[in-house]
Image: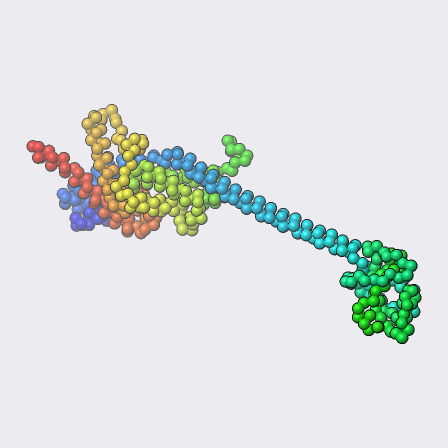
Length: 229
Length: 209
């Protein structure tokens, strides 16, 4: 073994895990070389110093204030996360509740509005009626048109009805508008005068029927009036 | 249930793995975090003190390492190594940053924090011998502190912490050969430094004679 090799590997002499042959060669070199023997001696002294230095500080630990600070930080961090999560959940819950409330309120309002409309506006019914059979109009009591198979219910746009003789104007909520097709001559049955030239014409007539089922007023829609006159 | 543990508290088993503790800690279990800290703080602190030469800096470094564990527990991957090696790696990075920032920074309270090195005063030991030993230890400590960081960490781990080459290589995440060569250079530098210091009084005495 050369001095250079000893300086590289020889200082591990005596350490566990060092190759036996290497140790033997290093020991032989130590006996032959006083320089390397002095180096080794110095190293042993230094190693001892290092071991003592290590042993003297081997029990040292981080001061307890470090643990306290870390635990405080840990609590703060997890508390913040928990708070944020709670706030988020609460926020979403409130938003969902508000949305639900508005949805329910809107549906209620719509339903209420629909019912009010139904109450205030007379129904509009379309019924074909044969001429000379005006008395059957009293049979057409239109309950919102729901159970009349081919009855068409529509809203009433213009309200220019002519009261029939000996009739009282009905309250709007009790009245039903019934649209019928009849021969003009059938209007005589309702007490109206009819031009005889057009007595056989088929016309559309809106009848305002009271809650007693009897027509109270009559209206000739615009198109029907044009064609019949 | 063990005595002293209230029903509401989670019980920490001493044999519980670091990984399990970290998972519980990440979920907000403070006791698990404390257990993890107590398991690993001492070697990290010693490593930091020996590397920086400052208890103040070592305290900050240990705090930083565990703060990282609080804030980003997912940084530790159990498949990549042990928790100890991971924490050493993080501490080492912090130490290197500290040394780059203040390579010659020493704490002013270094002498008064109870961590300074004093040889035990035995009955047979004279005050002169005690002072000599104390001076020698201080010289060794300063010589270690003056080593370049990469040699210093090899010396600290293998000579002061008495780790095997394999353990040191694992801790520093480098090949065993690198540890060997760094240790060799570190020892040579230490010997040179201490030899030089030893020579100084001789020369001084010679010049007086």
